[in-house]
Length: 241
Ligand code: F6R
Image: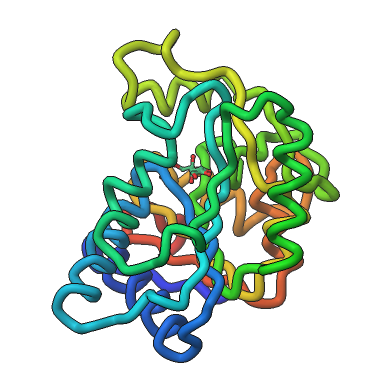
């Protein structure tokens, strides 16, 4: 695993944006795997600047998001559809038909998962997948205990994850209890994985990742088995000098 330590969050965001832009410039029809949450926000801001001021072209890119809450419509302010539109897609020239996010309102959720996985297999896998990390080691919404063989599936969110995400909702009880997420096996098919960790609250997770052997109780540890992972972490989330 390659590890890049940046001096702060701003530098982390610029570094990850550079990796993404290099990917898209080198292969204009790249498939990008994208994440939501707080950590990639700065990266997406930098990408928007890159599109507006440096002419980075996303017109041939395909995007797949990692996950979506079950029970939130695409127009709900806290759905990941809204998040991605508000922070990225609205500002870039990725054609709408090449943007893929699971439908958390699907009547048949199992079918939605199977269709999403098929689409990923047909069009993907992502050339570059962006990941954040949960304090409990989750990647996507694959909580501790998820099988490393999992494909896109419906998950019950861990109480700690709902609590961590409550900051985006008016109260904890408004945070959905389930989500659709790419599985661990799905994520591992990506050609290059860039894992972002920022802030002292991620220190323990980054330390566990570096110190532990792959085990299903700490989902991010599977990344040790992947041939091309770049961990980009700022100083406050870096466990060793
Ligand atoms: C988001 C996702 C999650 C987050 C993780 C970290 O699409 O799949 O795994 O990446 O919960 O979230 P933040 O960045 O808010 O700390």
